[in-house]
Structure formats: structure tokens, C-alpha cells
Length: 95
Image 1 (spheres, helix red, strand yellow):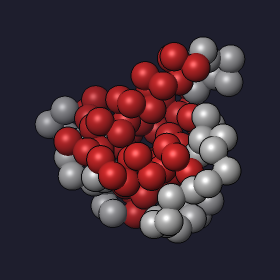
Image 2 (image 1 turned 45 degrees about the horizontal axis):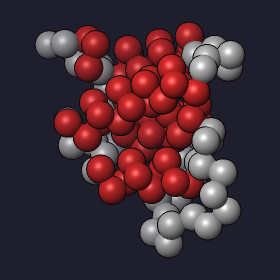
Image 3 (image 1 turned 90 degrees about the vertical axis):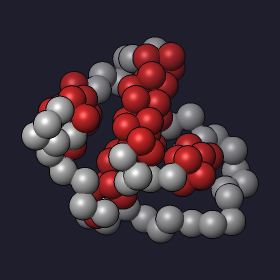
Image 4 (image 1 turned 180 degrees about the vertical axis):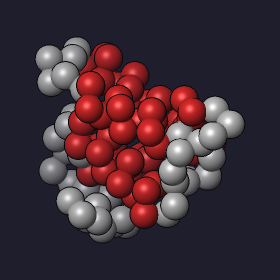
């Protein structure tokens, strides 16, 4: 699975929907996620990359920026499975 691409796409979708900094808890806002993306190292193990992607998507679902079904779709579309789901979120803006 191309987890970094899924992370970037999830972040991009949430940004277009208005997700930004969280002043009450900075660790749950976009600034922390953007910092994670800057620190992403392509030598991360699949497990670590999966934890980072899972953290982001969990935060976005908990705050209603993405639905669980949308996260599943994003992950499926960034997997090595050649059969993407029929519903398409479209391409990430600015990407």
C-alpha cells in the first residue's frame, strides 16, 4: 500500500473541507499532521507508516472531516489492488 500517498490525500481532502489548526489541542489539528508529513521518512516500516496513517484518519473521522467509508475508499485506492472502488472522491486539490 502506498501509505504516504493515502496520508497526503486524506490531509488534502480534509483541508479542502476546512480542517485547520486546533487551538484547544494542537496535536489534533492540521499543523501537527503537516509536521508529521514533513518528518515522514520513506524508510519507515509498513507498520509505522500504517500507524501514522491510522492516527491521521482516526483524528479526521473523530472530528467529522472524513467518514470511515471515505477512509476505506482512500486506502483501497492507494493499495496495490487494481480494482478501485466505484465511488471516487476525485483527485486531491492542488495535487
